[in-house]
Length: 128
Image 1 (cartoon, one colour):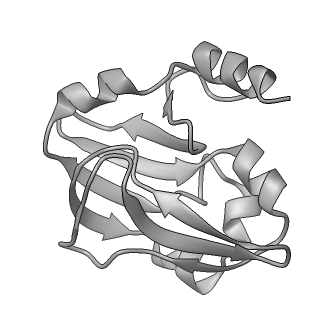
Image 2: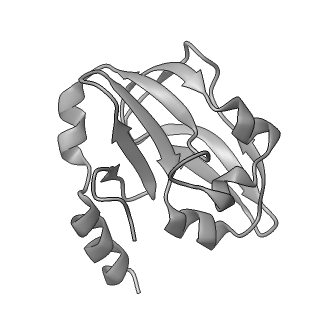
């Protein structure tokens, strides 16, 4: 079950709003399970800018390499160094310790372009 307090993108990223201007970003449990065992994560550097729905990095599993897309625009204020050192955290705890980046939002209204948990569940069901 996807946490109700998060927002979701069609690229299977989640956003946790920490304040009016700061969010955490990660990938969903669905994405982590689809990838299989994650062996490598490439994230943007701190102070880099990301654009909404633009590529921000890569995630590699034993099965494939997939692009990561930022669900919001803004400046990276932190990246999860633990995930860089131990990519398996993405599989073990995608909504907790497996978060990827913290972003200072350029435009908080972009959050309105993301899905609620219920909308994301419906989106997943429609993909079958």
